[in-house]
Image 1 (cartoon, helix red, strand yellow):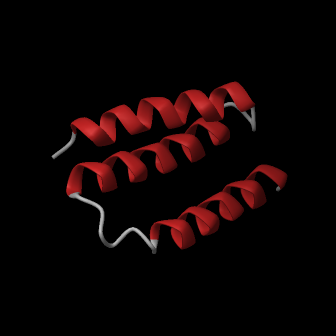
Image 2 (spheres, rainbow, N blue to C red):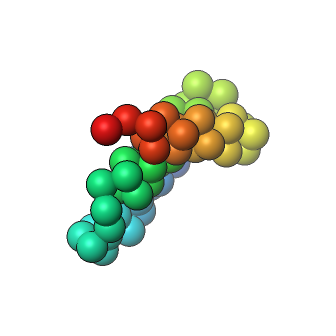
Length: 68
Protein backbone atom coordinates (compact mmCIF):
# COMPACT_ATOMS: atom_id res chain seq x y z
CA UNK A 1 0.00 0.00 0.00
CA UNK A 2 2.87 2.34 0.73
CA UNK A 3 4.24 2.12 -2.81
CA UNK A 4 0.80 2.69 -4.28
CA UNK A 5 0.29 5.74 -2.11
CA UNK A 6 3.77 7.04 -2.96
CA UNK A 7 3.14 6.57 -6.68
CA UNK A 8 -0.20 8.35 -6.46
CA UNK A 9 1.44 11.26 -4.62
CA UNK A 10 4.17 11.49 -7.25
CA UNK A 11 1.63 11.45 -10.07
CA UNK A 12 -0.50 14.13 -8.39
CA UNK A 13 2.54 16.32 -7.77
CA UNK A 14 3.77 15.95 -11.33
CA UNK A 15 0.33 16.63 -12.75
CA UNK A 16 0.14 19.86 -10.77
CA UNK A 17 3.67 20.84 -11.80
CA UNK A 18 3.08 20.07 -15.46
CA UNK A 19 -0.08 22.17 -15.43
CA UNK A 20 2.13 25.27 -15.57
CA UNK A 21 4.00 24.05 -18.64
CA UNK A 22 1.64 25.44 -21.27
CA UNK A 23 4.37 27.51 -22.91
CA UNK A 24 6.77 24.58 -23.38
CA UNK A 25 7.58 23.30 -26.83
CA UNK A 26 6.59 19.78 -27.83
CA UNK A 27 10.01 18.19 -27.25
CA UNK A 28 10.29 19.61 -23.73
CA UNK A 29 6.79 18.42 -22.85
CA UNK A 30 7.53 14.93 -24.13
CA UNK A 31 10.77 14.83 -22.15
CA UNK A 32 9.05 15.93 -18.94
CA UNK A 33 6.18 13.48 -19.31
CA UNK A 34 8.58 10.65 -20.19
CA UNK A 35 10.68 11.40 -17.11
CA UNK A 36 7.59 11.49 -14.89
CA UNK A 37 6.19 8.24 -16.20
CA UNK A 38 9.60 6.59 -16.15
CA UNK A 39 10.20 7.68 -12.57
CA UNK A 40 6.90 6.26 -11.39
CA UNK A 41 7.45 3.04 -13.33
CA UNK A 42 10.98 2.69 -11.97
CA UNK A 43 9.75 3.24 -8.44
CA UNK A 44 6.99 0.67 -8.78
CA UNK A 45 9.16 -1.93 -10.49
CA UNK A 46 11.96 -1.66 -7.90
CA UNK A 47 9.72 -1.41 -4.83
CA UNK A 48 10.57 2.23 -4.14
CA UNK A 49 14.31 2.06 -4.73
CA UNK A 50 15.83 5.51 -5.26
CA UNK A 51 18.17 4.14 -7.91
CA UNK A 52 15.25 2.54 -9.75
CA UNK A 53 13.23 5.75 -9.58
CA UNK A 54 16.06 7.93 -10.88
CA UNK A 55 17.02 5.37 -13.51
CA UNK A 56 13.43 5.11 -14.69
CA UNK A 57 13.15 8.89 -14.88
CA UNK A 58 16.36 9.12 -16.90
CA UNK A 59 15.33 6.42 -19.35
CA UNK A 60 11.80 7.82 -19.61
CA UNK A 61 13.15 11.31 -20.27
CA UNK A 62 15.34 10.05 -23.10
CA UNK A 63 12.48 8.08 -24.63
CA UNK A 64 10.14 11.06 -24.26
CA UNK A 65 12.70 13.35 -25.88
CA UNK A 66 13.10 11.05 -28.87
CA UNK A 67 9.35 10.42 -29.34
CA UNK A 68 7.67 12.85 -31.68
